[in-house]
Length: 97
Image 1 (spheres, rainbow, N blue to C red):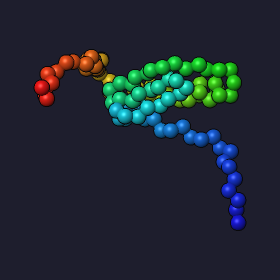
Image 2 (cartoon, rainbow, N blue to C red):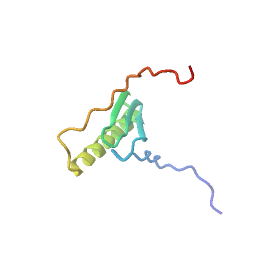
Image 3 (cartoon, one colour):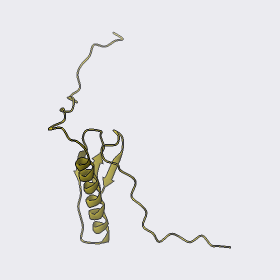
C-alpha cells in the first residue's frame, strides 16, 4: 500500500486568461487584476519583500504581466477602446412611492 505523503510541489497559480471574461480576478498580495473583455483593471498595492515569499509574488506578477502582453500582441488592436460607462450612481424615482 502507498502512504499519502504531502506534495512537495508548489501549488499551481489559479488560471487567469487575460481578456477572456468579465469575472475572473488574480490577486497578488493586496494587488488585484480584474479581468474584462476589453480592459483589465488593477487595484491595490503590492510590497515585494526581499525573501522567498517576495520572490514568489514577483514571479507571479511577471507571469501575469507577460500573459497580458502576449494577449495584446496576439490580437488586431483598435487605436482605443470606448471609455467605460460612468459608474456614478444616479437617482431614480421611487417606483413604490
